[in-house]
Amino acid sequence: MSLELRWDPTPSDWNDALRAVYPVYRWAPWFGLGLGALAVVLLVAGQPVPGFFGLLCALIIVALPMVAVWSQFRRNPAAAATVTATVDTQSFRMMTVDGTAYTDLRWPTMAGWVETRHNFVLRTGGSALFPVPARAFGEQEDLDGFRDLLRELLGEPSKR
Image 1 (cartoon, rainbow, N blue to C red):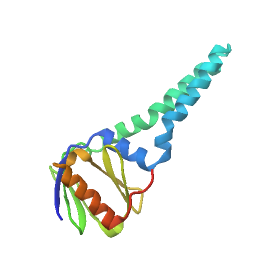
Image 2: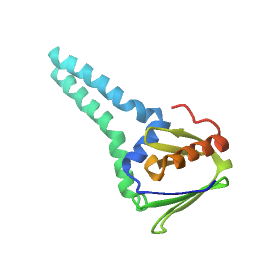
Image 3: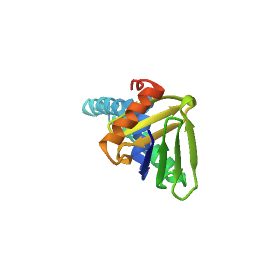
Image 4: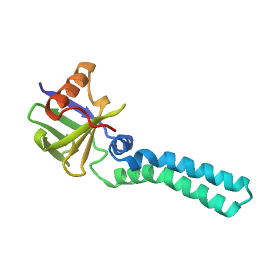
């Protein structure tokens, strides 16, 4: 089986991948919401300084992961370049269309994968993540074939 993929990366791809793999990204909005609710209770109880401080901290906690992903995406010159990929039983090869970046991921070096609503997230043994958006697949059969190939070569997806 061999697949040819093509997509335009977006910051939401990276954000989705980080939320799928790292709990701090996944739970930060909920923690910020809880802190914001406690800050509102302080405001209602007549404690304006700690209440406003809590609201400010809650906003920072909610916004910081998204701002970090967005800024890293904008600073990386190859991040927004159109990506093409070739997938077969030997490896997953990605290259930007303009040739500025090339990655050849051999399946035995991969630590696992996760499937989200929007992406497949391939993980290496280190901290590298490679989001492959579902929009990269031309047909549903290609998407299902990629999922089956990942199960065959890397096992079942990791739990989120």
